[in-house]
Image: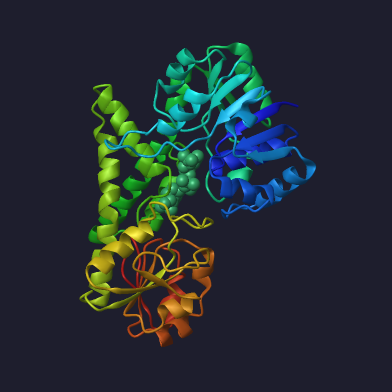
Length: 416
Ligand code: UGA
């Protein structure tokens, strides 16, 4: 079992630290946020991430997982140091590496292997390697928010980029059995961006197909059902929605476009992927306007505020982009989300979906929380001032909703 240091206790760092401790390694996890460190020492996990709080609590109790605000304590004696620091969007859309540079500028690593888990542009790990005395390995993460623990403990792949065979083998050996790819550092870095951007492209494609279905009289659910049967296309990531968001896709698509521009590579497909997504919130608002009439003073209920179901994360949430545009046109917004308790931007947060629907001129489904498919439709209809629902995720059971006298405006299909 290895001694592991993890720098950064965001959702990637914390999941990495807690899962490695669960797998029997001894882990010291550092974060600059002293308040967060104090909470984690009490095994209080802020984020909604299934299974994570239990692993943190066990790790803290057994002593296999230690939290500190001192990076040096995480580096000292570690055989592997995982960098799990944020790489937010910089001024030009590029990945901002200042958090990584600041930590490495002060770190004095003499032993062990330095593992870059943060999402960083091609060439970053090579650059870091030139400034360090220890082997540097690129090991991108593929954790989805909302199932990060499961993704970590049952990985579909582990990608390790290194020019040092024994360092690469050492990092691979820390993980549960999974298909492994050992490659050079640059390729490992690109696997991460290539995967996220491909998924984003798939979604922008589906969202455009849905628009075409609406205009041309086809049904997107049937169309994607037919596509799914082709194994070459794959079954996942074909659900239309209000646009893709979250802490990764928007940042990574922009960063890869920047990397391409720096390398003098024109990448129109990626540009179109981003442009299509930026139009998506406007499309939703157009549909709400059509359904509810003029938006100035209209009362609109919103079901779902997080960027997807299964998380409490509001970062780059398409739901909030839609809310911002609706509020900009003068709509009065009441929202409900099972994971959001406080008013958010222009949205007054209600205690239940029925409360969000009460007196509304239209209801808009923005996040695919399963409970929204099981509402008491006659009660929803009775409470609304005008019973019309715009379902951006095609989540609701069309028959039951329309039987209750509600007009349902789905996505990529006929209005019922
Ligand atoms: C994404 C990737 O899926 C992970 O593999 C990756 O590790 C992670 O980013 C990261 O880079 O850290 P995540 O941001 O948690 O994970 O979100 P996804 O589940 O991929 O969803 C992204 C967006 O696509 C959401 O807004 C979601 O609602 C939307 N989506 C997804 C759809 O609109 N339709 C679909 O069929 C699937």
